[in-house]
Image 1 (cartoon, rainbow, N blue to C red):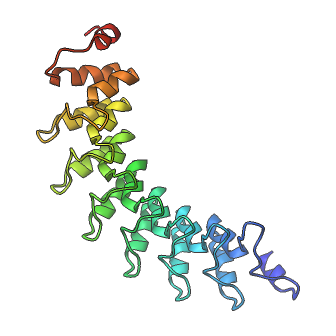
Image 2 (tube, rainbow, N blue to C red):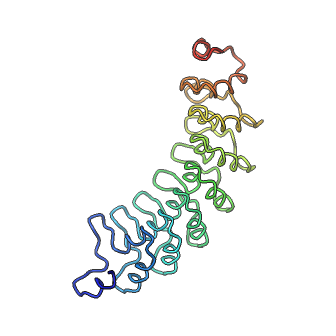
Length: 261
């Protein structure tokens, strides 16, 4: 069908729709390699044309994990492998955010792809992968010397903060396995990874962090709250039980009433 349409003189092979997406953009997004080959064989098709949000065919291929299409586009000199979209997201960042390990490896094999560039909100490929719990992508990125495992996001949070916040135990263990990751690093609100995990009731992550000698279980955030206080405020009884033995002071009346401590 594509060949038939392209055989007409009144068909523009690079005409965008209302969202700025061209036929090539759509084919890349869906992973249609055969259609991609046909379109890329034409001189009147721009392989790097962005849509209204600044995403090129490579952005969409990477975002959706289409390795074959990504290789096809990266084989061209006229497709920028590190071009940011309107939100500052590169193809690598989109692939990492969605856990597409194959595409991440392909992109990191290029010398012209920056593995640690943040988007407009401060999210790096590692930060986003840690936040989503993509263990494979986290491991791939941490194998590189040019990826900072402690690079801060917009609110002063590290990849460990993000993983702890969402309860991703596997990613937390991976990051804590590194000697250059501070397990007790405070974010912009002076909250530690333990505080973030406690606040959201992630008992597994709390246990992992409490097993460390370099984690202070009673560290105060900027609002004067300990991890125990934050867990109690949210009603996380299991986390309260884990943290209570570390509190040197007598439990507050509200804790006693709420949890029978």
